[in-house]
Length: 312
Image (cartoon, rainbow, N blue to C red; front, side, top):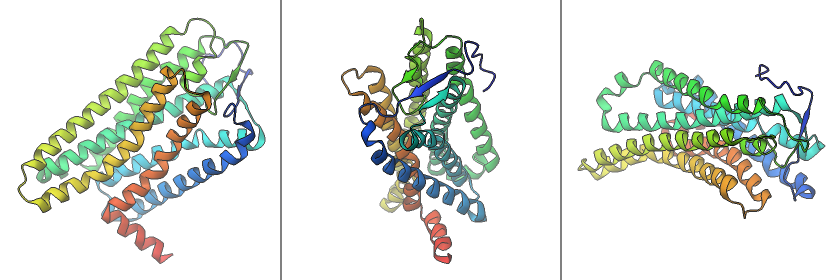
């Protein structure tokens, strides 16, 4: 990312203010922030460790869970250390290159996370609608390739955002009223016409989220149709139980994500600190809840986690 053409001043510094209007409460706000982050790291690293050690869990479904866990570790890690630096030590400065780098990785991981959820929906569709062909349609190697495609897609879609911003100077007022270098917050600091950047960011949000949600919806329409054809109520329940965890994870990710993005762009009457808290919680809550949801809803994983924790 050092290749960004920030020719106007590589040494210039932007100021992240934290949560404007709540500066006096930064220390108190840092307590849930750091707690959520620690719980998220512990849960996701435990999931990775258990799946890595257990040969019986080396299946496409658990490989996808590991991919989700990696994005859940990366997402808050790109933000929380800087936020805590602001809250605890008043370290508000960040270089332009550093800000653009944070923005690139933060949004790239977000798009990758969405792609993983789409692949997981496809995995559930194959498991329920084509169970006899599951092992041939979805092998570990094929899931890894789908993950690589998702990563390449995320990089190609997000890379233009920092590149477009790096071509324009920032205004004299280099204060970003935010805890992170979120795209819209940084775009407001750029001088000159940023119509192209704004339109690209908006189109990107609707194309990525809209397309991914459409594929997920299609998968579940086919799943519901297949389940309704099953006469046994026990089979109904078993089929739906395999989807419950994935549905919960999707709700915790897409609902606050869409709400945060739309209110930040169009919610002019909402107080700035509400925008920022929503954006931060969007990065903290899903990574913390995902391993808990899958740990509770997936019996095989729950048993393996219990075996290791009890042993210790």
